[in-house]
Image (cartoon, rainbow, N blue to C red; front, side, top):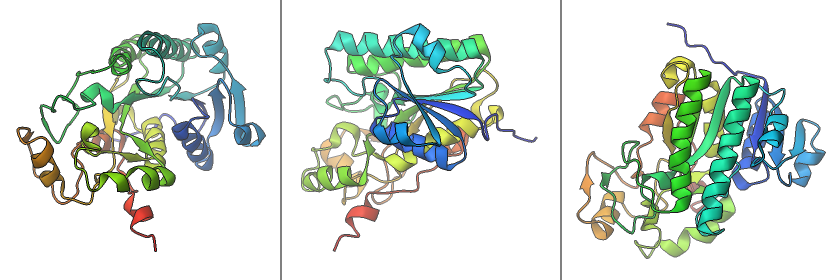
Length: 299
């Protein structure tokens, strides 16, 4: 059987283009030869000046603006949302995210886009782990367990994506991103946690390099319908680094902080406690980068 990609090239809208992940994704897709439309309420100045990128200002909670913004596109990487709990009042976070996601999915259906890729979240799986996880490594079946209205907005959107995929026959791929980190984030955030196993236990010491997160969106655009489960599929996969942010072995950390959590398969060394096998199988993606490239190389 020959697996064919629906979007080896074309015009791709990236929403939330001014954010940390949005900027990396715009750059990644442009470098791969895509015609990119960078959409945000305030596009980044460098994107506005980039001749290879069309920058567009839009409020995507408004369906009319979403329809206009996606006109002429072949696919969308939808990253725009209030990105975490606690940034806005709970009700604002939930209603803004759900309204925006519905508008983008509806606009994609209106224009017949050939692939929708969107940012779900590791928080759908039970973060922060103030209540211990059910088991480790955590996989896609550790769902749904929202612990905030932000996480709930993502759980609701996963069902919404499945519905729009069924209505349109176009696959909607949800990427359950772990904590997205840059090189500077590594320097600022990781060393203080090395002597305190509980400091970043809220997500089992997981993270994802921003470059790998951007590459995951591109992989989701190019994955064949057969890989995804057939036309109109709506898979949701965990996107995390292959290791934890810690220097200590993962099994040792788990035993110290969550001694009653069942370890369902072998984890060696500092290997991740989030399973990333589904992402490799479904979209053909594996992480390539680690914080160790930055911090272990310091003089």
